[in-house]
Length: 413
Image 1: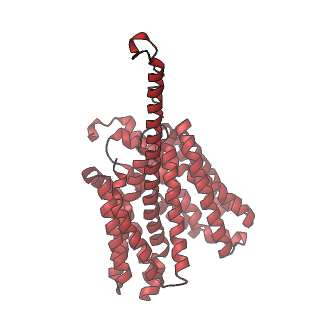
Image 2: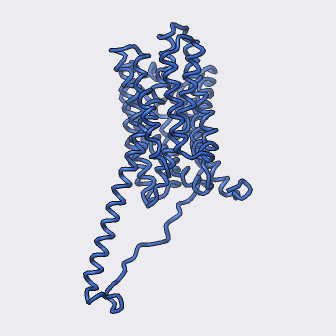
């Protein structure tokens, strides 16, 4: 579909989904940049904070699992409206917390809203992408990264101005509600399947075969039930396979995001400022890669994105592990970001296009498995650093991304 044939309504829908992804990134960043101030105000130690972050992650998983079936039943537009409203309201919670208990409650509520928005806005993105007739999913995820960058700048500016976290997060909450009110009218309404199942009768005289019409209809219904069960099993296997690839790619992404700076600091004995360049190189190329991945996917297909992206990421990890020089190490982290940029959006798009009436539920299951990888990756590396050097522990994502390259045909539509 050429850009000239895309009507104004579809462009508006695309802009609305862009806004939803950006809003999610901004609000998450607003919480992250205020963690030091909020933990100091509530008396939360570093160990307690880690527990609260896990609590928030667990709440997000609950939100993801609830959002899938709800989006299938009520439509992703309704769920995006509800989840975006919820996350806009609950982002204020951490700023109002006064102790570890109230902070935990606030983060749990915020996590549920975040998980629900994650699934619902991706389900909405799949619908818009389907209407466009060409890959646009990666650009939506790029806007999430851009939103995180904007949110971090806004939060830093507010802190520099001496604003209290309560005031900054209150402004973020009001802004989120306004953005939600503006984006919801542009979202795509659920297109119901007009073809309803009906029962076929085989008991009319002209359909009887040898006087066994009833037996024939029973056999046909049995065959149909068998085919449906087979299709369900194939669908479940496809969803699980997509989830496993998402698990690997998000595990590698989590490792790179959380450990890149420390790896450079320890392995090359650099300054903290120089070490910070590692995460900068990774995040910059990941954002750039997500803006470019749709064009590459349109030209070569989603399998190529996952296969060669995984191999590029594996090469990046290999360079990071072996490199004794900072410039080369930064190139390695940049390759990791570029390689991991496009794979996850392709997986989510494939999950949302499996057909049937449970697209959002399928996507929520893939999300849940993949999100576990995002949580497990940094934790696994942290545990391994008690036994082996951090750089050696990066062999885990190196091996897994190579395996992911071989499993890339799973994303074939």
